Amino acid sequence: MKAVVVEKPGSIAVVERDIPEITETQVLVKVKAAGICGSDVHIFHGKNAFATYPRVVGHEFVGEVVKVGSQTEHIAVGDRVAVDPVVSCGHCYACQHDRHNVCSSLQVMGVHRDGGFQEYVAADYRQAYKLPDNIPWEIAATVEPYSIGAQVAHRGRLTGDDTVLICGAGPIGLIILQVAKMKGARVAILDIVESRLEKAKEMGADMVVNGKTTDIVDAMKEFTNGEGFNLIYEATANTKILATCIRDLPSQAGRIVVLGFTTQELPIRQVDIMGRELEIIGTRLNNHRFPEVIGWFKDGKVQPKEIITHTFPFAKAGEAFAFNDEHPDKVLKIILTFD
Image (cartoon, rainbow, N blue to C red; front, side, top):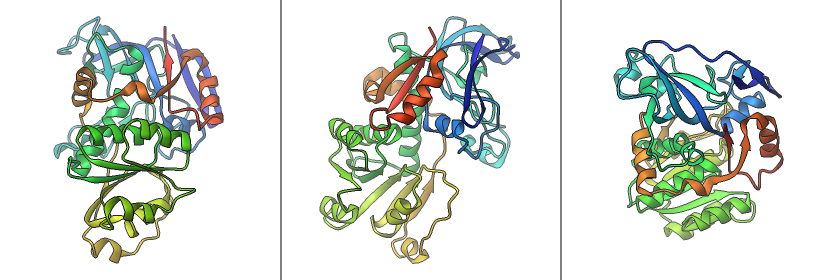
C-alpha cells in the first residue's frame, strides 16, 4: 500500500508500506478520505512539540472496514466508519474520571503513532464509529474536527444564553461558530484574514472583527453593552490575544476556553482572573464526541461542506501541503481523496 510520510520537518513523501496486520480487537479500514489539519501542517514544519519522525500524519480520516478481529463488537466488514484518533490507557486518573482525551500516556494517531494518510489503517474497534450511508466520504472526513467543536462546547458549558467571542476564523473557529449558533448564542468572531471573516458572516456570525483595522475592546463594548463576553474561545495560539482575552474582554464570572498550544510564556496578572472570578479552561482533542457529531451531520444541524475549500488525490499530498502554505487566504479545509 501507499502511505504519506513526513520523514523529517520539511520533507514529505509517498512511500510503499505493508498493509497493517490487525490484532483480535482491531479492525482494518480502507481509507476513503482524510482532512489536512493545522496540526498536520505544524508537524510538516517541525512546529509540533508532540510529534516524532518519521510519521504518517493525518488524524481526520474515514473509510470502509475490510477486516475485523475475532474479539470485536458492533462493527462488520463493509461498515462505513469514522475513526477517533485518541488512544488512551483506560486506567490512569484522567481515564478513570472520564477524561481519556488527556490520558497520562495519551497517544494520537497521526502524531504519536501513524495516522490516516495511508491506504489502510488498523485501529481498535472501539475507535470506529459507524457512518450513515448518505454522508459523502469528503464530508465524513470532517467528523473529527467537528468533534473539537462538540468538545469545546462541553468544556465551556455553551448555551443559547451566552454572548460568545471566537478568536480565530480558521476551520476550527468556523466550526465553533456553527455549534454556537446551533445552540442559539450571540457570536462575534475575530481574525485578520478578511476572506475568513466574510465566510464567518455568511455562516451566521452576529459580528465580525478584523483585528488589523478594528479595536477589539471597542468592538466588545459595542457588542456586549460594555459587559464583556461571558464565553471566549481562543483558537489562535497567540499569547498577546489570550492576554487581551483575560485582561480586557471577559464579563464578570466569564469563561475563557483555550484551544491553542503554544509553548510561549503568557504575561498575565492574577488580579484580572481573581477580580472577576474568571474560569480559564483548557481543552484538548475530543472526549467520545463522535456519536454526537455524527448525529449533527445526520440531522443537518451543521454545514461541514462550508469549510471544505479544496480536494487533492492523496498521492499529491505534497502539493496539497504546499498549496495550503501558499494560499492562506483561500484555504480552509483540504480533503485528500483515496479513490
